[in-house]
Image (tube, rainbow, N blue to C red; front, top):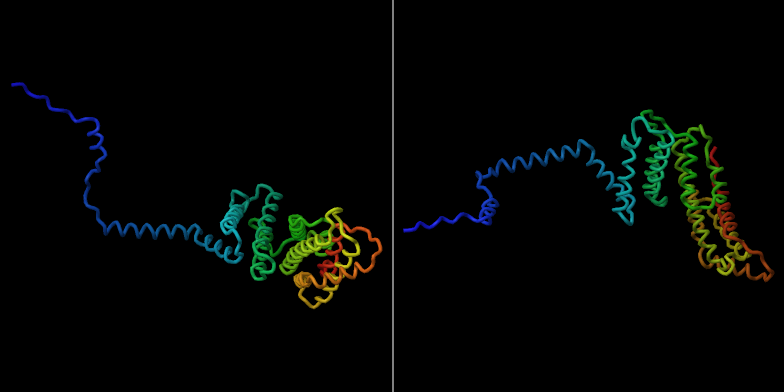
Length: 299
């Protein structure tokens, strides 16, 4: 009688056996639960030790304080700015170059100043204080204030980034700048920052007024009409002399309603004599001069 051969296991069956999980001893759920709790505690301790918890809390407070339209983009810029403070970027220790370090500080200060609009007075003042500290620190050497050169450079950066014509902001800078080696206290710093931001907004609103007067065909405005609007604006600023400058002057300019402007323009149209054109630059320069005349010089 012939003996039948025993079939060998196929390759497919061998693969199945390999994938089958090995049966191990029963898990101790009590020990596993304890290890999870201890691991969670150690992770929390780690985040506390490296300062991540405080950093995230501070970032969320900044979001609540500024209430930006795009919170995610706001946080991205916030953490990118914080990266400049690391030792690798000259934030502590010896800087790779004094000029580079100064530009980094100016950038950080300007970023903090723009976190909140100047009308949000509490948030704006807090950010002014942080910007002042950014510029006052000098590596391992701590100073009580900042010098006039750094303060003046920041004023120029604010005006330049605000896209205001140089001939418009130059008179203001000459009025509120400090000497290069002069110590600038926080009060003077705060007043200078506020004045610059308010002037930029004032000039932007003056530009909107000019667009109402401008003849698109020739890209200029009638001089009589432009001067009538400037006279009305000057009257509104004079009526607000008792307000807190400089924000009070911006509010006075915003109170120029359609009725008052229409009356001024009607009076200008009464005289039918030929009038020379007024350019946008001239109108903005004259409007800014009305504002700057109300600003008290630093001294």
